[in-house]
Length: 243
Image: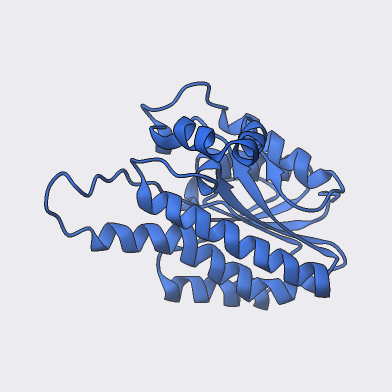
């Protein structure tokens, strides 16, 4: 996909991978509708800050109405926003409902909601993308973040099914995953080694978008993980279990 002149929606745009994606897409000549709870720090000639709390269904509905009602159509959606909460449910009695609800709302309900609502609009464009950011943990989970892993596995399944629909009815719409490696962001502070920078991750994503290939974008060492998981699921599980 040629990015110059395209209008791309990026969620979670105010920091980390989302911010790097926003800035690099704008640098390629795209106009970025940068969605975040507080997008006030975002600035640029091709960056349009859009405020939305993606955990809130009513806020998502307002965002969708705004995007669809805009006189200028959009050519892409990158569902990047996500949170990861560490949880050990066997340690002490607790009521985890609020944390679980919020993690599911941001990581799973929001990208499903935006994807389903905007897919017909994107399918009407001559060339469009709908990409959902998942993780290597969508293939096999780790012990310390059960809900996060479940949401990424669910998003992976949804994206595959939606891609099947697009292949049959809208071949001009590329639907796929961005399978993200471990990236040095606030969410990963204090854990993991060999992290990519947010800029490196964004560069890999944009390179994948600009290639005329369909399907998923595997970032960093997730390409190797994909091979290991196919050859030896048990080995992949051991590698990520305590990540």
